[in-house]
Length: 119
Image 1 (spheres, rainbow, N blue to C red):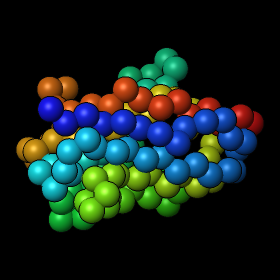
Image 2 (cartoon, helix red, strand yellow):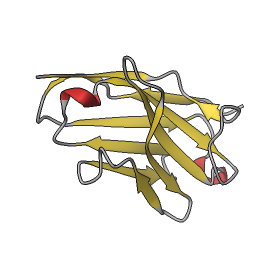
Image 3 (cartoon, helix red, strand yellow):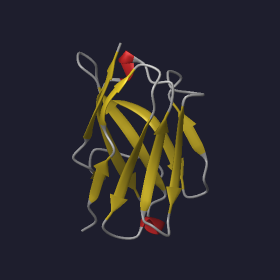
């Protein structure tokens, strides 16, 4: 059973940067798509960014130009570089992975890492 473990969250001032990491206990080569989701206070969980095995990336409009997702299959890790952070980026960030074409609730999910952006 593959496990995903996130790290890199924390408290940062607006305009700052953080880099989240998601390490898989097994090989990430078997995952067609990996992604980062965010759960913010008073909001539903939303997709922040996703990356396919073909290195195609998609981003939420709210983070385009500020966040970058990448994956290193040799290290079984996916990253989320977050720059120019805003208070509205505050939330719990979850890593997810799927062998199919889309990520569903039944696929692999991490426990989450908290990101807090102060104004």
